[in-house]
Each structure stands twice: as structure tokens, then as C-alpha cells.
Length: 284
Image (tube, one colour):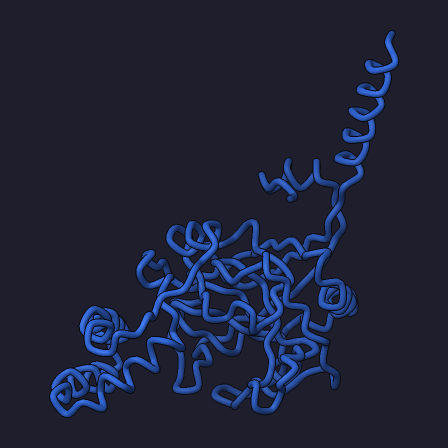
């Protein structure tokens, strides 16, 4: 065998061995509406290690998905929810510490993303995560035009547009749609104004979006406004339909489901081969 052939064989063996050794942590979130299985990202080690620690200590067991917003996300992990009376306000509990933000650009908030809840930027400029509360994205499907709209620039252009008294009719129509609570109607009017706004103000309100994001948000959907602001640390690889079931539950004014949705969480480390066999998911 030639020297080149031997080197090629060795390289192939190294690649095969590397693939065989690849492993990942899998979290199973059991609810009375079904189970969700998620892979935890190695690139967010602080969030991953904390989630594993809490799961192994049964910290999440009997906690509720206490905040549910259809078309956006389902949130849980508040320890105060374990024995909370019906209708009691929730969302302020935690283990008494925060986790440094781990915002990895390649992980965005498409449907099924597991991400850490946190306080607002005003209270929390460093975007540190709550020690236990997390949310799972449901989101919605978006078209390319909406995805490439720079919200900050468009808001600035709208303010300039509405400064013109001649556009009061458009302002009133948009305000009425917002007050009605019809999100679809509001969004349709909001986007329909774009050509007029751009023409009158002369402002560029577009942004460049990576192809992989465009594909994900235009097919499975998600919540792109969260990108770069929250630490995404995992992804549901089985049980996406459970997110939809929970998101459909009737809620009170505080977005808490009127029927309790309790969870328990377990974790295990599996090989890439076992993950592929059980869940049909290929580790990146």
C-alpha cells in the first residue's frame, strides 16, 4: 500500500471514530398534553449545565407552563408555580441566581427553540437569563417581505409618515386595528402601509437576513424578534405538535392557562447514532 493510501485510510478512520464518539444531551419534557424531546447545545455550556443540574435534582417537576401566548411561545420553570392557586400571578420565581447571556448567532428562534427567559433590558442590560425559567418558541410562519423589514427603521419611518396631517386616516385605521385586538388585521395593515411610507419618507426600511433564517421562518416559522436578545440553548427535535396543543389552551388575562399544564424534565446523554435511531435527528 502506498504512503498516500495509508494516510487517506488513517484520515477516514479518524473521521469515522470522531462521528462514532459524538454525543449530546437530550432533555425530555413530559406534560399532560404529550412529551417534547430537545437537544441541548454544547455552545451554550452555562445554560446547558444549569438545565441538566436542575433537571437531575427534579427542580422542574410539577412546575407549570404558566405563561402561554399563541403564535409566540410557551413559558415555564417558575418554582412558585408548583403549588400556585388558580389565577395566582406567576413568573417572578427562580433559584436565586441568573446565568450570563450566551447568545450564539447561528442559533435563532425558529419553532421549537428552547430559550431562557429574562428580565427586560431596562432592568437587565446584560441580558442575563433567569436561573430556571425557560420558554419554547411556537411563533408563526412569515413571508420574505416581512422577514426583511427592519422593525427599528420602519418604526422611525412611520413616525415621520404620521407627522404629516394628511396621513391621519392611515393612523386612525392602524390604531383601530390595534385596539380591536385582531393581530392579523393589524399586521396586514401595518405591512400594507410600507410602500406609501417608503415613497413619502424616502427611508430604506429593509435589512439583510441570512438564507437559513429566511428558509426556517418562512417554512416552520418562529419569532425572529427574539434573535440576538435571548439565549437559545436547545431545540425540540420531537413533539412540536405538543407546543401547538399547549398554545391552544384557554388563558386568563395574565396569559396563564386556565387548565394547569404541569411538567417533569429528565435528561440523558446519547450518542449521535442513538439520537438518529430514536428521533431521526442528525447532530450538526
